[in-house]
Length: 139
Image 1 (cartoon, rainbow, N blue to C red):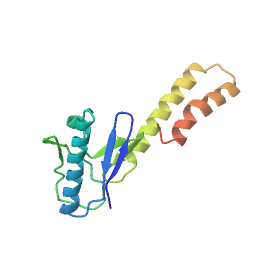
Image 2: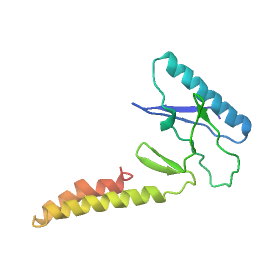
Image 3: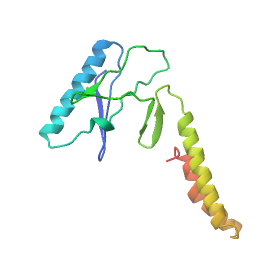
Image 4: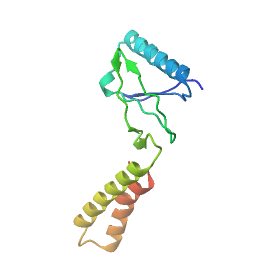
């Protein structure tokens, strides 16, 4: 599998399927090339804002030793990607908890303000403020 890069307004995600040390070395090489490209294009990369995450349910003992500009990229147990909370063990628990907490806050806010409102207004508020949180990944 080749390298995949996703560019956003002020973010970049690099990922690749790795099976052995050679795959990990290729990913490190791509990161080095990304740094060179950024320098040529007057863009800044902050290694301190980077994370190395391995997504698998398997027990893997090989450490993640990726670096950027000579700085070791810290290993993380998960990350946020386009509003989704992704965990290295592929569990959705953090994402579900986040969405539920955000929906409860929106519900309590809505109910507090509309305590004496008409039922139609309360329903409309729920449908526009709370329900989208539960339907759209808890963003």
